[in-house]
Structures are given as C-alpha cells and as structure tokens.
Image (tube, rainbow, N blue to C red; front, side, top):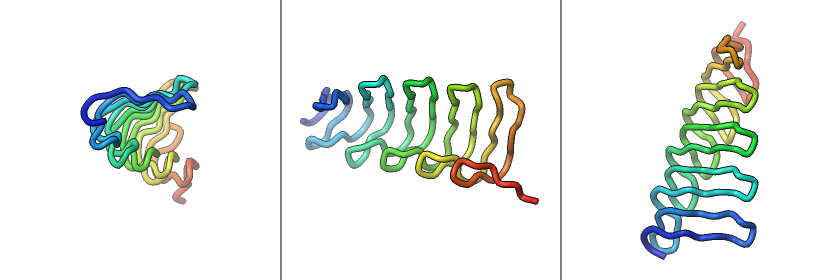
Length: 121
C-alpha cells in the first residue's frame, strides 16, 4: 500500500489514512473495537507526533505521542471531569503540570511523578 488506504486486523482494529511502502506514515485514524480512537500523526508505523486519543469511557487526550504513548506536553480531559494540563511520560502525568477538578478548582499545580502530585515542601 502507498497513499491513502484503509486496513483492518483480525482483532477488529481499523486504520484509515496515509501509507508509505505498506507502513502507516503521515496522518490517519486508528480505531479499536471498544470505540477507542486515535487521530493524528503516524511515524514508523504507529502514533508518533501530535494527536488526539478518545477512550471508550469518554477520556480525551490531546498532545504529543511517542511510540503510541502520551509523551511530552498534552491535555487530558478525564471522564470524571478532571483536567490535567502538562507533561506526560508513558501515559502518565509526569513532570510539571496542573490538575483541576470538574468545577475548575485547582487540585495541584507543580510536579507530578507517575500520575501522583508531589508536594514540594
């Protein structure tokens, strides 16, 4: 495949978008059977670069991906209404960020390690 195409796997995942020499490369959409969807940049056959992932539970992440994982700067709107804006590493809030509750009240601003806020006292 080369150019725009649609491809499905036996596990019912579907990719629609750009291919270069049979590899997902460029912009595309990858959808899982549970309704989870990634839309954005593909490099080296997977989600790499800027994109948006929407999960079946309603959680939405917008930001940078490396090897299919949230990695770099992004914003995650969780299904319970919380919003985290900041740095991620391997799908987790990691680095500097800000977490707010569903009403916009700040829960924590500062350092996060592996999804946990760290007190800087």
